Length: 144
Image: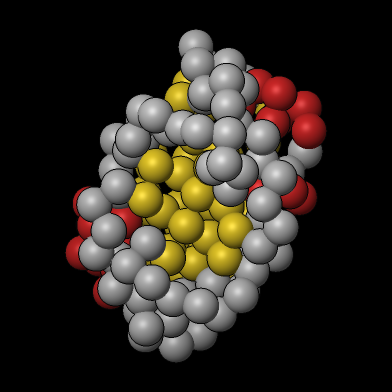
């Protein structure tokens, strides 16, 4: 019997989004973004890692949990798939980071992701540069 928990976040774009990072992808509650933040794909999120629901965190900390992140702006959608880990803490108040590696920090919400910021569709990235665009992020954790 599988268990599944879904979280929906709202954020928006920013002119400094470049989405060029090769190993990570980040969403943040912060509004400011410098050009050095090349992993950030959305700002002003209504949740950081710490604010995700307890049922989501509990499932994501299980071995063999899968995590899917859907990023949607207008009609452009990107799906990122990765894994949870017992080492995830979900304790960062502002940031949510998906990583291609197995590295875990208080900001990490997904490891061994199949995409980083650089891998996103460039049409989507162009929309993410617009601060007027709402970004919907749907996180789903599942344990089979």
